[in-house]
Image (cartoon, rainbow, N blue to C red):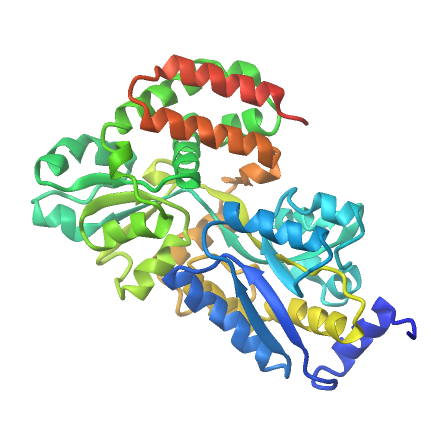
Length: 412
């Protein structure tokens, strides 16, 4: 087989965007809720418009279910054409094994370093000076979602933050409304982290997760948070937890629950339900306490292929994902923020505008947990939080002590 260099592929992709045989490209992801499916369809439509074909490889369940399947396929020699992952350390072993496509030439040619923001997203795709993935959005986890009608029907003012919600919780319960909906698994850890950030502050959160500051992890700031969680769990008992995050959001949309703590991707579910931000529901960044954003999100990796046509299609998809039009179409439906600052967001809803305001004008933007600590340690932390929230007999002090042990043992 004739050698086919990355430079040749890049030249063909950039110089002759509509030339070449159409190629089927299997793309794996875990976007299966209503809002997610509507968003990923925008990617598929844009890629198909290049003359290639998006073969959808949706994996039902959460990222925790999909990631091991994705990584196993790549390591086992049965790679997909492209795959969603999160920014962080998940693909490090695959890169080290030489299994992932180097996108550096494309990133340089299209000036990703200057058109994509914040810088931390592309930095998460960069290993030893080379770019291996393309960031497609900025997701943040620190949001509380409330159904306005639930409160106004009971003669209450909709809460402006988590503290006001907890103050109203007893009356909501008396009226047969679940104050705070919660899903099993990773949403528990997300909720706990959001409360950690809201009450202990961004700096302390980063010092614990990134710097492994055991004094803070075991100190009074985090102690108060575990006490807060102990009070919250009376409103989120295990028998009230639902299996999936979008089901928990759905309870708020249906008016069966007053609020849910979930990332900005929940906004896509409200849009599918044709609810209007600021009128039918409220989205409160930083749980309404301190408006903040973490730099989570989604990225796409491209496993190496021996087929030059597949490689060309991979680069075409990578380029397509960050075009202005595609960034707007996808993120408006996903509920996330676009990676580019130079796009037309006249159609942005109230929630996206709040997020953009923080991103563009605030210093309260910080790394996602997976960008600071390894996946195994995060899983242990989530298991601990899940046990604590489901077991009213576990003391706050005991949970905090176990948390400190996990942070101490986490590799740096």
